Length: 149
Image 1 (cartoon, helix red, strand yellow):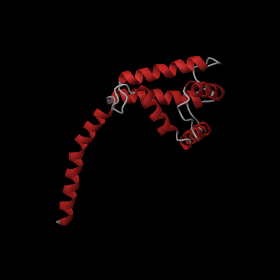
Image 2 (cartoon, one colour):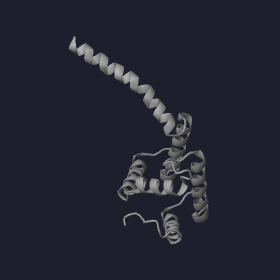
Image 3 (spheres, one colour):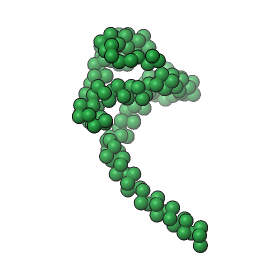
């Protein structure tokens, strides 16, 4: 009797939290379709960046290389630091989140930076181009603390 009461309580709690979770996710950002489009775009960008063979897929060595790059980025505090700096720069209404217009402005800025520093014209920044972009950005924005400092 006790076990079935506990089971029913857990089951009820689960069903009660599902709508609340869905509402929170809907308020938190883009609609699910937009999120999956964004995720697909990011996946394509990752494949383009790490696919050395050009076959549109990442083999084990390419996935390992991507993992190393991700870990290096995280060790520098990259995701939180970059997200915070991006938010500080583009969150015009100050609500602590990026709406569609703010995201579009941030993406336009990123595209302009790629265009500005992409010397080989491949549509992305290699390590040398990225270093040049960082150096120029730090010269233009001395108040921004570079990673690792």
